Image (cartoon, rainbow, N blue to C red; front, side):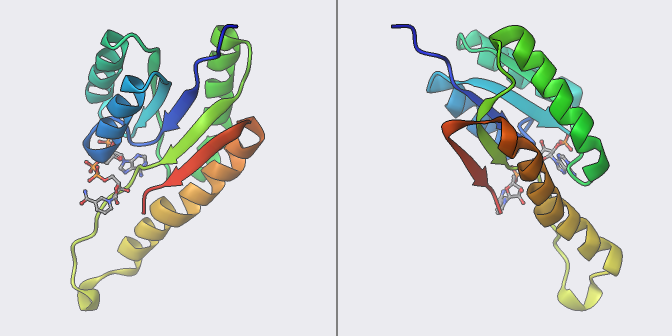
Amino acid sequence: METRTKIALITGGSRGLGRNSAIKIAQKGLDVILTYRTNKEEADRVVEEIQSLGQKAIAYQLDTKEVKSFDAFVKTVGDHLEENTGSRNIDYLINNAGTALYCPIPEVSEEQLDDMVDIHFKGVFFLTQKFLPFMNEGGGIINVS
Ligand SMILES: NC(=O)c1ccc[n+]([C@@H]2O[C@H](COP(=O)([O-])OP(=O)(O)OC[C@H]3O[C@@H](n4cnc5c(N)ncnc54)[C@H](OP(=O)(O)O)[C@@H]3O)[C@@H](O)[C@H]2O)c1
């Protein structure tokens, strides 16, 4: 019986912990969709590394602060998957994209705090909401806080 290759989508997979996770996931035999915010070349290098492991991979630009862009992103991912697998579904969503704010509490501005909340809470919530209808049974969602 032929078994289907599972698919993981990881945000911020172009470097750091996201890149490491993407490579490890591919080593376990999953195909990977990763996102980057600014650095396409870095993301393309991760895609090449995953492909050299024998897995499929593709990178898309996504800013997780831009909730209004999520519908178009989910459609782009779904169209790609439908064309290549016959299904719009993924198995795992790994909400990893994020930044760090190194700043003493008395000096944090409202804009900086809004940024952190938008990226680490609002974006994670709504991206998850958008992908829930496209999650295969038995899949999983991981949030990197
Ligand atoms: N490293 C740590 O010690 C540590 C500790 C606790 C939690 N974390 C969390 O773990 C996650 C990964 O951390 P890391 O250290 O691996 O980070 P990193 O090396 O700075 O990489 C961050 C990744 O997220 C992407 N990204 C950043 N802001 C984004 C946004 N607004 N929308 C979409 N993508 C965005 C970056 O893309 P571009 O490069 O294209 O901008 C990059 O791919 C983050 O959520 C971080 O808060 C890390």
